[in-house]
Image 1: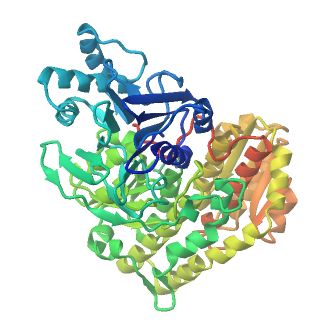
Image 2: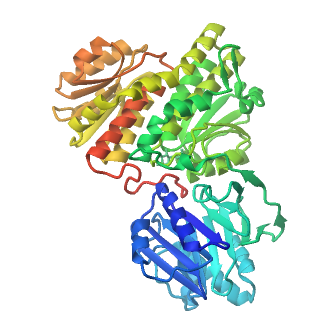
Image 3: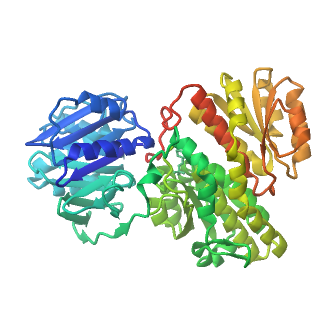
Length: 611
Ligand code: G6P
């Protein structure tokens, strides 16, 4: 979703901003723009990709030492040049970029219209900006003060960068609910939605908190709260290399990230999973073991792929810890006034740590006294900071919009947590505990085996790439993997796909089955194996095309399926970490075969920072 970049310092601002916008492209967007200060404000905006913006300014004087840039994911108003950011105020004196939504913009707009303001876009951002301008005029105050007053009166989420035609150096920034990182250089500062545009210039960053305003000049960074009190910036060292956000020889980030999984899982387990000594070292769990194992109920909140990881965790935690678990879509959980009792634990799962629905759900659960445990990939993100305790997935930056390595990282972390809790609680015995630890430890090697040769998956993808619909079926631990397989295919190939519990298929989706419908069965060897064999037969009897994900050497499944993709044998609790990988690759290869932009699928955003 919207990406924000700002620069003030001694370098040419435009190339820094342009490169930064390209690094943020992965977030998903539909238009781009920049505002530069060079004896006044100069704004350039374009519907489409950053490259189109770049082309449109060829030959123009882009010289400036300060500027702001934006990639917009449309909320208010269609993607167009005029709705792109930066927006400019009526006087032409202010320019602003904004990530988020101003919910009460209509009433503010009506007031401003009555005062004679006019609007050249459909955006809430232009309203917000003119509101600031109006306050500045009426209160005869400075821009910072006007912004502070405006922020107290708007409802919604925002991260904004604001510049003025009478100040060549200063960028004023503010955030609530949408992320903002400030990179600290020598005589220069970088501002961005995440660290990726900053990393090649400096590793020292400040994560701006909600309700803070930052006044940023080349030599100065002042943080204040909305009460105009100075805050001490907390400087963090980025633990990330530039290579981590580049493609490293792969055609797409998605493919690179799928192939990184043996390493990312290894990194996730390293120093934590110690089968030789029977220990699982996770300080976030250890320090709060009593809250976790005595929980009356665990509620997992998440969105998208992370929600699927939550479903796998539901099965694991109930089996290993005997604690009731509910898995909730964060957006629904937040708005249906859920019952939260003392002793409830909320586990939040999020790759980005910035998903607005998850964040808001957590804030309200926290207010009601719930204990929040965050499982997050992006270090220092809002959800990580809001949680009472947590565990990072350590999958490294995930750039492809479709989540792959972050998902398996989430599964690995959740497995360790469930094992540690179950063993501490006494709901699993030593043998199963050590056995599962060893199974988890073996996952990176088994992933390497799957990824060694992916040609059979590519062949299947090419065979079915023109199908109109797909059905994905699984049981038990593989049911969430069927959902995830369907989601991946939809996201990347735009083919309609549904995931279903294999047995539930009889209550509806079976009506769709004919000789044109590919049905993917996630059918690795587990306690449901015989049952899923029957489900496959039900599909075959209706001439459906069966693609099976099966355990190596499972001749029975292979004899029934039209196409079989094998994964190494594993305990059923661990199997999702393996069975999801051929499905990630299937979607990837179908998307590529259809000539689609798999890293930046249409309409999708990597980090969904609006509710
Ligand atoms: C978006 C992304 C998905 C992701 C979901 C939740 O929809 O495209 O890949 O699963 O958001 O994001 P989170 O960062 O909270 O895991």
